[in-house]
Length: 463
Image (tube, rainbow, N blue to C red; front, side, top):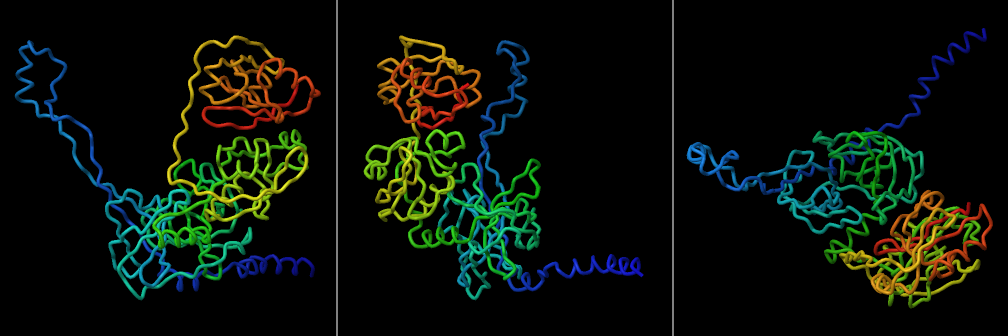
């Protein structure tokens, strides 16, 4: 009897599991018409050829030279050719405003939008923002179907989501998966807390919507992680609230204004937290402060750790970038700092980030330093000359001539300039060695290092 019951249960279990799977048909019926195919054409100019005959390497006095000159056709000169690309987008208003990715329409000479009813329209770019990869385009039409905007903050990890787009040109393809993580930071993408999913997203899905089960857009599919160029289970979407903020600014002024406070920051590691007496490895460590910046005027200093910005906790350095960037220039903000093993609060006025940041010049080093010494940490140090300090715009510091052993493992490189040890400035090799000797074996110290045109803290364990 028990065996029969177990057999019946085993047969019914797959049916129960199937019954729990969501049905996406209604969502696709209602929202699919608002998803569009975006194709672009770009005219490129080939620099190949110079118009001269394709004469082999034959001397001019050779009898065959005249033959090649007269009968061999000339090299083709520069020519123009068209390149095409495909992407996706979705309609956010009935009068033809469409959201897509900036990289989909970047440098396009012509943009064509194709609707699900096969109608095609030429589109113009209203504005684009590279930092968030958002673009707003417009077609001349009315009465169009549009999506419903949702709240990505209510999205939960493990929740079902659906993508609609045109992977490899296959229009209105529907794929589904779950939210794998929220608030993901990607390299060189500091202004977007990405939604990570395992929804199948491929080239051509870029710019398409990510829906929750209510049929609301919660993100814009933007990137994939892939070693092959195709889907590998890691897809990233821009939260729709970030996209709509950018959209409203682009529609209003044609550009995006972002806040800045004028600090260079880096992540706080476990070793750095130990060095600065922090209870846990969180916050944004300040490694440089720009002269005349809002941060300097507010009293923020190098080696401060920013714990909160306007009441929002800073769990990682990327959090501070996003919070400051999303604050309007001119607004007032409260910053909570960790300094000398205690918290303090400062007020500052948010500045405005320029559209293009000037590239910082990497200073060259001239002359041989007057003093050089090998440390027990695997570094060969040299004292800076007056000319080198002037070029680097520093008052002190010691130059790393070579890095091996513990120093190399910590990430210190030849050419780095060590400015401070645990917030204690260093001007000579003797000062550096004296400071290091105060720490017991196994302890970690934070070295403030000047590298190129910037600075960063590197944790180094005493061995």
